[in-house]
Length: 275
Length: 326
Image 1: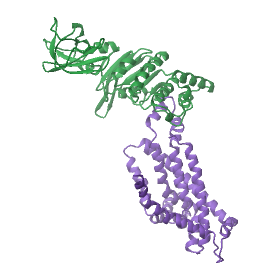
Image 2 (image 1 turned 180 degrees about the vertical axis):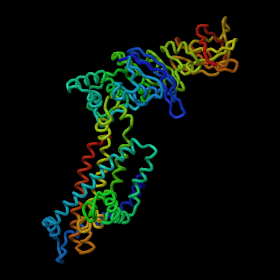
Image 3 (image 1 turned 120 degrees about the horizontal axis):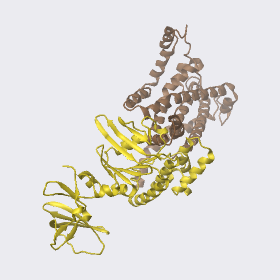
Image 4 (image 1 turned 60 degrees about the vertical axis):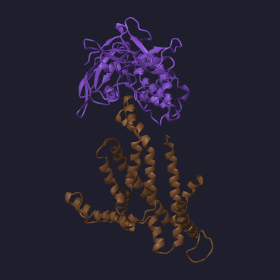
């Protein structure tokens, strides 16, 4: 019986090995080879990355961007998840569908919609002009701001769902108990609801922040020349410049960032684990 | 601690009247059970007193103060929930201190009170644990301690023993009664278990379909139930018709059985079923097509009555309970 169960895991092991672990190993090997043609193991890709201030600046910008996306998503998602879990009853499913729409929308469609919406002379621009809030052009497209807007739209549903699930598990009798013990609604929120929903918040942060580090579609389309981040650099290395070895090295730096942030976050998450 | 008065308290959910013009007045320090089958409105009644539901009509008075418009967190009511509702992210101590922290008390006062209440429920050695690390009975004690810590005007217990296994439940009943008598707090105890209601309370309120069927001491409600519902919900009862068409009930333990015909026998029948349960033996006797239940204390070991045997039933006139309905 036990043997049979083990047998069932073979397909997934094979898939993982062929499509995830092997490519990673190949990439790792590439990252230690020189793009200039000389053979042998070299560290020049990594030293290049860490010694050139332009790449460090890009790394910094990538992290700041991802942080901005995470924080804005959190500000949008928490109240939404809270109202879905604790206040709306009948509306819950409709709101959930509305939130899930970006999930099911093709990435390019979503991003180009934002392009049309945000561009000078676009929908937002004409609207703001007609209400008299701005004169002339908006100038938001092809800035980091546009990138952040596009990424928030792409990622906040994940956060709504993780927080919603955590809040759903907070039993209403706990809120009543808190109230019967004399706590106001605000204190109940900060002393009971928020701490108990923290595992969902931490998972949400992880699920938004980590993939944000590696995005390149939104930065490229909505950020234009100002949108360059690590993700776009890696893409350029592979598809434009054919500097695969250097690209692989940057990818591994990104990979390290992902691992570090995931470890850190899951450590924080464990502190709130009550199971 | 306070006198509690409920006046014409009514709650409707849509078309359903869940609690229908309930009037109760409870003197200070009384332990009251609200007893009834599930769906009788007892929990809704409790939730209105706690402030979690707003009554559609009627008033709630604590002493002279009407509290209907007072929010739950200002009522100073201790509540023990069916699920205990302990805060899972806090230790036993922190749970008990929670209510005190909402009041303007010094840390020393809080610590002293927490220690005192935890001692009362014998949970001292567990005070640093989280609720998940406690057994059901222990969680129950913590929930009680948390509710008592705030020195509530009124304590509400919502079916809080029903999750425990039988042996533990009986132990907790006795202990709960002791703790509550010591703390002298007016208590409403919601239950569907008649034995629990009898053991725990000074006063029983029997509810059915949103109305109060009867109120009284356990003795009154058991010995003098007003109607068929109360008689059969609280303990067991046999129902008979007298010659003039009125109906009456007789409790099974008040029926005497004998194998020989004797003077004053009221019925005769055949034993169809015998259950021996240690302290008592129950006999089901078929009399004129009606099953009559009779229980005998096993003061001596006896096996003189057999299944299929013809027996004579006798009871005192005093044991007949006249019923109001039908």
